[in-house]
Image (cartoon, rainbow, N blue to C red; front, side, top):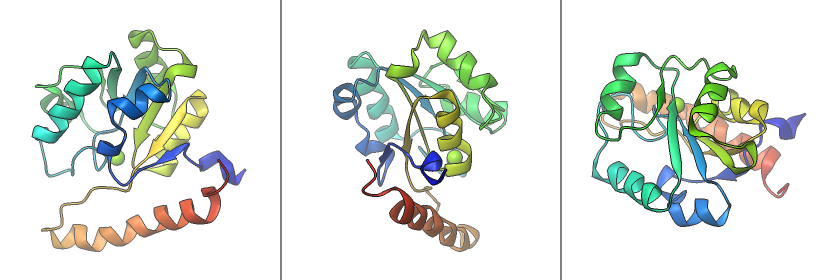
Amino acid sequence: MRRYFCPDYFFATYREADAAFLAAQNIRYLILDIDNTLAPYEQPEPDEHILAWFSALGEAGIKAAFVSNNRRERVELFNRQIGIPMYPKGKKPLRRFMRRAMADLGATAEQTAIMGDQVFTDVWAGKRMKIRTILVPPIKDKRDIFTRFKRLLEKPVLRYYKKHCQGEK
Ligand SMILES: [Mg+2]
């Protein structure tokens, strides 16, 4: 049961899951969380690193979609320059919008992964869909006193991973 929430891959940042890595793992389809995975809540649009990362995915023939639990306005604005299929209010870990995203991408479970920062949202959604899961620690805006407090919440994710997941792959 423990292993149910263990991601297949754990990276310090989304950037480590680059096109070369994904292609080598035969991941052709990627379901993506936005908030605290690619950018903090406070960042409404992608930065140059995110755009470059998406360009590289596109060049490698990897298709991506956003399934975000955030509201439509947030997801639309973030996706404006990227232009991939998007499913706001995605209700992860429920499967409905995950299924829809995969169907729209023409994705098979074997060649799909989800990347996100939340074990009980993103990883669980991926496990339920029987796709691979990539966990990253939540990105926070360090300037903000509240997020400095929330940074404490990252630690349980790391601790969970170290305790339950390492060495099991
Ligand atoms: Mg998130």
